[in-house]
Image (cartoon, rainbow, N blue to C red; front, top):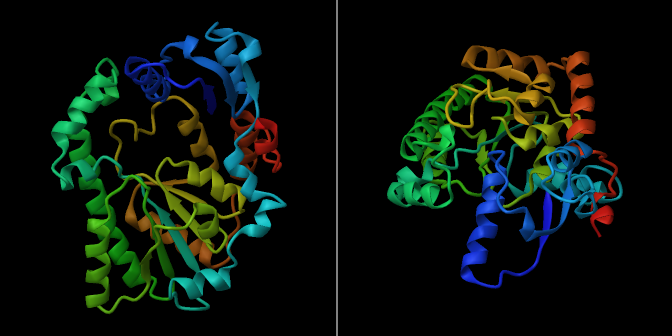
Length: 306
């Protein structure tokens, strides 16, 4: 969503605005009086806001997701061509590209020794009553554990698929120390097929990718828009990374290959790289999901916002 808000008149009001933005992610709306105009991604969300009496209908408008304008003409023509992408990052030409988008955003608090800050921040933002956020320190430890296990799996995939360029796209809020170390280890073992890209938008990476791997991430939906097979690799359920939590993230699973183990992941990568087609039922689920949660992907969402 995009909220249009007046500038805060005090530190206290700024804090209230910040709490509202964060709390909406958990389904709790802060103070609706702070909103002068709410531009939603879909009629689905607009109807929820209006039906619950959270905002006057005149204050809520449906625009779609402006970010998705880059997946249709004319903005799609601005995406980086594959030849340029390969050359820029020193990839091996002619190899297929498999993208892995990570989102272990809490793990950094373990690596940077800021768990105390994380606990206090969650508390000050009002996350206490929300069950999945009740123990942020444990969530951060789990995030780090799963990231390390995932890297071990990708090391073995690099050995198995030596003729594939694996691209790691970390979430902007992640630390990259573990990934830097991982790449050094790969090179020391003679593996030249794993690369990290941090400074490109996901659409430029997807434009060159044959397969996209993620974990309950919007980038999975963006892969759909590029007709790139989307694999939801989900090793463990904890916190908000839970396949059973009702909501839009769970609904998106219908359009993905949902995989939880290394062997199946390798088999699916091999299937798509060998020219395997995407499941028609999953393609139908993708279309229905996009219509429900993103209104229209027609390149005009930014214009509707304006």
